[in-house]
Amino acid sequence: MYKFLFPFLAVAIGVILATFFKSKRSWFNKLLLSFSGAFLLALTLFELLPEVYEHLDAKRSGVFIMLGILLQIVLELFSKGAEHGHVHIHKDATAFPWLLFLSLCFHSFLEGFPIHDHNDMLYGVLIHKIPIATLISIYLIQSAYSTFQSGLFLFIFAVMTPLGTLVSNATTLSPSTAHCVNAVVIGIFFHISTTILFESGEGHKFNLSKFVAIILGIGIAYFI
Image 1 (cartoon, rainbow, N blue to C red):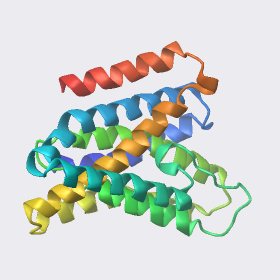
Image 2: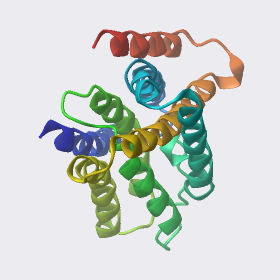
Image 3: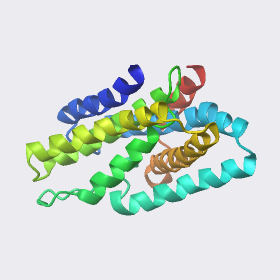
Image 4: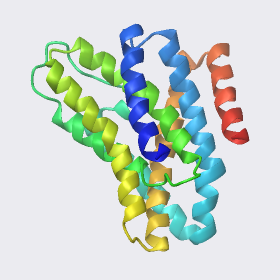
């Protein structure tokens, strides 16, 4: 049950946080984003990557991981990087951002695939979605979209990851196909998390608080 509930709650938490931190540049959002990037990357390396390489040959695993990276690059042509904290919604825009919405939903659907019972990737997705949902909520609050449009956007975004988990758990995919899909998701996670970490330093300056957040993310991922 938790595997379906937690990703949904992550978006709800993001909406609540958005009401307190109304600037995307707040120190809390930056630290949470850095922590989530390190946590997601570490869990992917510690949990998901070894599992895929154990069941698929190395070359095939690498090919599908690269496909995941390329897929995420394509998705960001439409989302403009919202998956790692870049949300560009103009305050005076009235047309619904369909490209952003569809790319985010497809990304969220795929990230639900590796989640199974007693699977630590659930926590990686949970921590990843909170700051992203916070930033998306901030921009929707500041936009000219109606409350209904913004609420529907966030609700569908929230249910896409549980839907991906449901499809992954309920369908009779062959083990090989399931691991290939997980390899694609690894590529997506690699792209997102490394982008977050590379962008966490402003002007390539050392920031102690962000460095501590990154170390904490890696450490907690190792010990859970």
